[in-house]
Length: 253
Image (cartoon, rainbow, N blue to C red; front, top):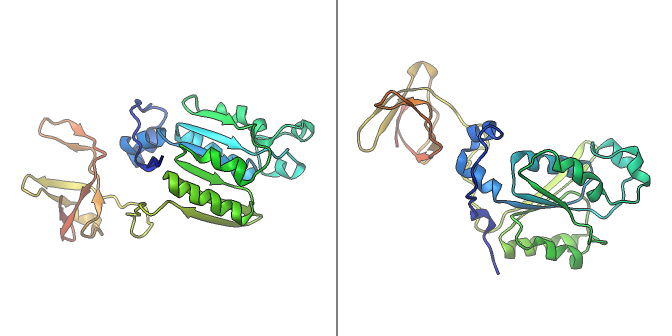
């Protein structure tokens, strides 16, 4: 069965106090989609621990840790959840860091897959089912990586492979044929103060002239927040509007 995991929308309520900063940047819809996402993380080295921490704090639905390798002295320099006593414990890195990661966010289910003994296609491919994202943070044979990537494409999951070697790093992302990048330049979103909104059809927005040009282009998406409505109340909206520029300080919604 093929599942488009990128289109899953969560129905759970968003904890606005916990995710206030993210909501300001992404909005409720994006946060709900993230809260419905299941992540498979292969590798619990230093990079893996950082990826897991960030995913959990961001508020995904669940994360499965997969790393049967035991901890070694090298791991202590990168994985902040491992202790010196863990080296002689005989436990896998995934099981050693699970409890500490689970404490970061009560809303995220954190599990360590202890059934995997070898990081090969036979063991890893079944874990990809129903995942929204698969992240690999340790070196694996090329044929294994290709097989996992192909399984991700078939399941509609995103595939991310990244490793670090000292000050150098490598990353490869495959989000499938249907993935669309709407960010044209990768720059941070611009912000402008609204002077007024004309109630025409289409509506025309004018920004303050003393802030300079709005630097928008036809087809760009904007959100409008903290604007007073007719009732005098501040309005906040995460809805995006595609715009058409009509001047250096004006555009149509």
